[in-house]
Each structure stands twice: as structure tokens, then as C-alpha cells.
Amino acid sequence: MVPGTQPVLALSGGVGGAKLALGLADVLPPGQLHVLANTADDFRHLGLDICPDIDTLLYTLSGRANEAQGWGLEGETWQAMAALEELGGDTWFRLGDRDLATHLWRTQQLKSGMRLSALTAVLAARLGIASHIHPMTDDPVRTMVHTTGGDLPFQHYFVRDRCEPVVTGFSFDGISAAHPNREVMQLLQRKTFGAVLVCPSNPFVSVDPILQLSGMWLALRESPAPVVVVSPIVAGLALKGPAAKMMAELGMGVSALDVARHYCQRYPGLMDCFVIDESDATLAPEIRGLGVEVAVTATVMKSREQKRALARFTLQLGGN
Amino acid sequence: MVPGTQPVLALSGGVGGAKLALGLADVLPPGQLHVLANTADDFRHLGLDICPDIDTLLYTLSGRANEAQGWGLEGETWQAMAALEELGGDTWFRLGDRDLATHLWRTQQLKSGMRLSALTAVLAARLGIASHIHPMTDDPVRTMVHTTGGDLPFQHYFVRDRCEPVVTGFSFDGISAAHPNREVMQLLQRKTFGAVLVCPSNPFVSVDPILQLSGMWLALRESPAPVVVVSPIVAGLALKGPAAKMMAELGMGVSALDVARHYCQRYPGLMDCFVIDESDATLAPEIRGLGVEVAVTATVMKSREQKRALARFTLQLGGN
Image (tube, rainbow over all chains, first blue to last red; front, side, top):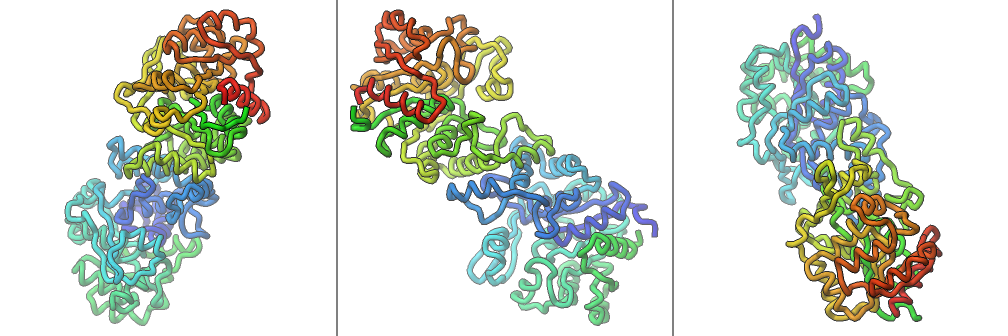
């Protein structure tokens, strides 16, 4: 394999996806990685337009992420939140002082009429990122989490309520009217990508919103690039986030096999290869029975080298 | 004198006014001081609703002001501005991290439909301030500074351009449609105040906008409370800010006498007593010739005790 003979498209949510994206950015030539980021987690808070997944990608790919904490910026300070708490303001969603600058700048640009995709490109450039970070759409799409206690906007479920409510389903407000990212759709039409990778992100609230945009998954299926999906479930656990808890509450099994089934049922013919962890190797035959190739490797990405290794592995599968 | 037998109304701009307001708050019984604050300096910046004079009063009266710096909060940090600078955002108006919380909270409340006067009362209460801080109006009034190089919104003139442009005049956009603060007008009608003090604030851009609100200066003149004005010009200099430079550029003399003339000409019969500094004592006869009483004292307020002394002096003149 010669990595990077062709550009690569990676679909990503937040933390888990950003880890693989960082590995990909490391091993591909500069500018060859295109990340298509979930924006259904976005929300307005304190009057600010906040894009958690895009920001995690921006901070991770620019080397600014707080890896120990798993979110936010390294060396972040919290003076604004402390003062806001004194004033009785909403502080359940913790916005660091430096992080606030991102939201202030974005909110201002959106108000002045700039599209999210254009301003995200400017942010990435100013943070020194060579990769392309594309919001899945410039239109508002908002995940609603249906729970036994009623519907919750995603961040209320995820952050404020710490994923405690029992999930019964999801919907993506605005998705039927949302146009998928124009630039990515054009690149797909021009057969630009050598591979399409689905990062180990939450299938329900990170990847589904991207794939369910009008025309998106069919465009990916019709593209000649192989579609390689990395399982976010390892040994029956989600490495990060509520994916496993959601699967259990939805009455699904909690395994890489169930993730593969989800993708095969909802997006028939989309996935060419499913990457599972070594600890799940025994599931391979059953997953192959769904009609997809299976590749087994170490998928847990703690170190930078583990991120690069998984990136190289998935790129090879993509024939890149 | 028994301070505080009746409530006192103080008209104030930012730093200079807030110093006397702090002295007044110290010597009056809790809750007896009402400050009517200029809001014509307010502006939207980075999508935030910023009220510089109100905030200076909030921070000063709550003991949070950075006295050495002359503006902002003690112990403030600047992480958000540093990050915004990296992103290429506007940083000419320096918003500290803790200060940002005030603007975020205010902007959110205004968007939700709360009036500026109501939310300012909440802010003051949450900061532990016993005095009442009233915005001069809930309606938008914006000072435009006319200069030889064209018109400038106040903060662009004051902060971004460091008061360098040569001033030819001022106007207050929105003032004819703005309703003066309802609560203060009601208190005036009920003859609640024992004295009205005009703090040593800039006559042109801090006090004029308050007095020129519909019905305001006439209501003050008709109130039985004596109106005592403290000169912001001492020995031909403005202690803080561009008042002296403005007077020179407008072709006026630069002295306490010229300030007195300004008030007497624009608001005939309003001022009962004019307080000048000891260093300007020789101007007293000519000021008396304008038909106002003159009181001479030390008006420079560096220490807390100097603030209290000037507060006591002005209250005695007000017969309070």
C-alpha cells in the first residue's frame, strides 16, 4: 500500500471518531484526509452556536485536545463558568475559557451569514489543520433522544442528564429538509475518494445522522470507494460514551455483531468491510454471514501509535 | 446631617461616576442609593450585549473592580481573548474571562425577553449589591461620535481608536423613541429622593444621554430634591477619559466653569449646586454668576476615604 494516493473520507462523531481521524491525518499526506462530521449534536447554549463533534475534531487534529479528560482543550481554564455560576447562569454544559472563543467566533460568523462549512474551514486553517473538516450539513439537524421519561434534546440527555434516561429511540429534527455537505457530495460524484471509513463512533447518534441525510448513504454506496466501518463496540462494551447502554435499552444485543447488523439492515449494500477488535474475533463468521468482509485487529486507540496503526490497517482494507 | 433619611439618586457614567457611587453606597444606609446609569455606551460585540457603564458600577459596588487598571475585574484572566486572537477574531475590545459570563448571561436574558432594568437588578442582587442600579432606559440608545474623519459608534471611538479622532459633536441614536427608566421616573414623581447628584462623569457622552431622555431633565428640575453636580474637570484636566480633549476640540474652554456653562445652557434651572475642586476655587465667582451655588472641596477620589468624604460632602449640599 502507498497511503494517500487518493483522498480518504472519514465519517466521524466526537471523541472516538477523532482518535482515528488523528491517526489518519498522521499517516496520510497533508490535505488528503476529509472528515465528514456529525452536526446533529450541535445546539444553542447561552446564545452560542456550539458544535461539539466539530470542535472535538478541531481540537484533536490541531493537537490541542485534552486527551486525559477525553474532551475539551488541554490546559483549559474555567473562569467564565465560575463567574456564570455566581450569577446563577446555566453551567451544566461546561464551556472552558479558550473554548468559549471558538463558540463566540462561530456564532458571530453564522449571524453574519457565513455557512457552517465555510467557517469550519477557516477555523481549521487558523488552527493549523491540514485535513478538511466538513460539517455533514449547513442546515440545522438536531438529535432528539426518545426516553421512557419523554423526549430530550441530545445534549440534555448526554451532558445534563449524564445518559441516565432509558432510551427508546432517536429522531433527527430537520433531517428531511437538510442538504448534505455540498463539497463532499461533489467529491463523491467525481469519484475522488479512494476509501470511505466510518470511524468507531456511536452508530445511533453520530453515524446515523450523517448517513440519513438525503442521498448520503446511497451516494456512499454508489461510490467506487470501499466503505470500511470500524466497530465502536469492543468485547460488548463501548470504549467511550453510551453506545452499549443504548443498545441494551433498545433491546439489541450488545456486541460488534449487533453493530454490523444495524448497518446492514438500515443501509443494505453500503458496508464492504467491518473491522472488529481481536477480542471479538469469534464473532467474525456470523458477521460474514451478513454478507460483509470482516477484518480483525487491535482497535483500542490509547497511544498515538495505536491510532496510526488502526489508521494504516483501515486504509489498507480500503485498498488505499 | 443624618445621611440617608431619604433615598438619593446619582446619575453616573463609568469609572469616575462609579467612584462617587461607591462612596455614596458606603455612607448611606443599605438600599438608599439609586444609581441611574448611562446606557448610550452599550453595544453589541461578538454577539454579546455589553453595558460598560452598568458593568463598571456592578463591579465597583460589589467590590470586584480592578482599581489599579481602572476598568474590569480584579484578578481577571484573558484566556478567551488569547484564543480568539489565534482564531483571527476581533479583540480590540478586551473581554476578560469572568467578565464574559456577565455578557453571556445578560445576552441570554435579553433574548428571552427580560428587560435590561429587570436583569440588571438580578445581576446586582446576585453580586450582593444593596444599592439599586437602574439603566437610564430599557430601549436602545447609542452614542455616535461625530469626528473630523466621520461618525463613529462610541466604543469604536473610545476603545478601538483610543479617543484619537478629533470630535465635532455627538448624537444619541434612538433617544427620541427611548422611554426613560420607569421606576426612576415613578420615584421622581413620588418625590422619593432627598437629593439628586450628578457624578463627575463625562458631560457629553455619560450625563447628556441620561438628561436628554424624553422628560428626564425636566422631571429632575421639577423634583423638590436639589440637583448637585460634581465637576469632572479639575484644574483644566479630566481625571479620567476624554472629557478635556473633547472640550478643547469642540472649541470650548477646558475648565470647571465651562462644564457649568454647558449644564446651565442646555438644562436651564436644573442645577442647584456645582461642586468644584479646591484647585479651581478661583472659578467660583464666575460660576456663581451663572446663577448656581458653588461648593468647593477636594474632589479627587483615589482612596476609599476620599470617595466617602466627597459622598458626605455632596449629600450635605443636597440637604440629606
